[in-house]
Image (cartoon, rainbow, N blue to C red):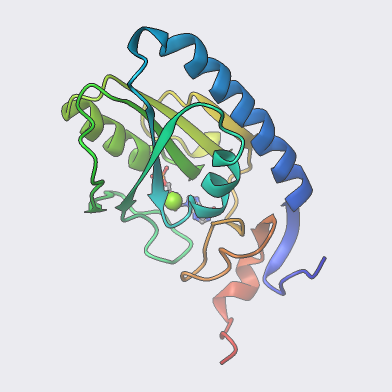
Length: 193
Ligand code: IMP
Ligand code: MG
């Protein structure tokens, strides 16, 4: 495996993540199979938060055996750097009407919880019947708001992470692993042309 020079430590390999996605998909399948029966034509809206959700959502979707529709939203967050944004905003709204629908929010990582809380409240305000949350990574120690995370893949340390959807300055989302970034090196880093 080729390791990017901005990596300090690889936390989860592609193999680890693949296995975890299968596990999460099974739990999600089971939950909706048991809880949506009374409303059979209500397929689940799988709502990914761009751009970080892409690798995780792609992997998770392929093991979902329930009927789903896919939707996406963009919420401003880190603005590319290593420090969090205090007040996330909706930049791109989803297309489907969520009124009376079951929504599954799919996120790469939850830190303060502000992004997910904003989206969850927004969807419930639009009449969503249920809003569940699945995230690949949960940075529990960063939590600043009260939020229920229904399913998470890995409990991660309070470090700046890169790869598998997570970016630094919009790059590194394509690394096939999740790693702790070398923040000392990042400060003076210039991207190759
Ligand atoms: P929250 O609103 O603080 O929960 O932030 C969630 C968003 O911040 C995620 O969707 C990510 O886009 C971004 N984020 C949080 N932690 C990291 C990280 O360690 N690396 C890269 N992006 C992160
Ligand atoms: Mg994100």
